[in-house]
Image 1 (cartoon, rainbow, N blue to C red):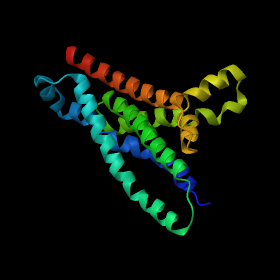
Image 2: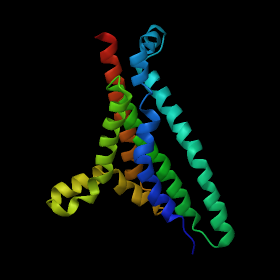
Image 3: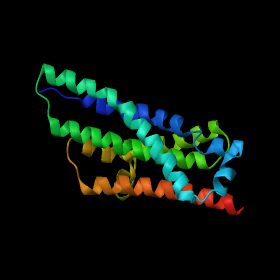
Image 4: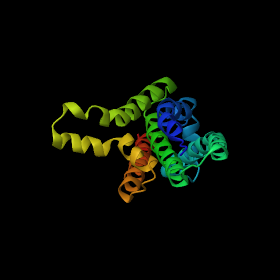
Length: 192
């Protein structure tokens, strides 16, 4: 049976660098150029600004992922392919991308410098992605907590075609928490 496992294993590694690069100037450049203050004069809430930046980055990521469907078409023309695993893999890639982008939006909200925003975002997403790789050296109770926090642990479940509500809840909560933190940073800037 054919598989797209290599695509689903390699894409999150590429996304570790792609997501911070996509969003590094989304809010930091607005701060640096002063256009964020212009946005604050409009009847727009901070969460709307953050949500707009996030949805624009997520849409760009979606269209960036679209050409990989050629792999699906090519492999199905050659042999049998487990469609459930492919759907789960693409759903997982969209969710992992959303988490990385939300964290990177938060990283961009922390500073006016794009390079600093990239480095901060890369550090956070890399740390969350690699958490389940160091579990051998830790006590079991700490290892279980870190494994649940790790992004790759939840992605590996979905990439196998197993769509569990715990994994979906994890991704949605990570996206919501990251966007909330970015909104709080913008609110503090408005009232400072």
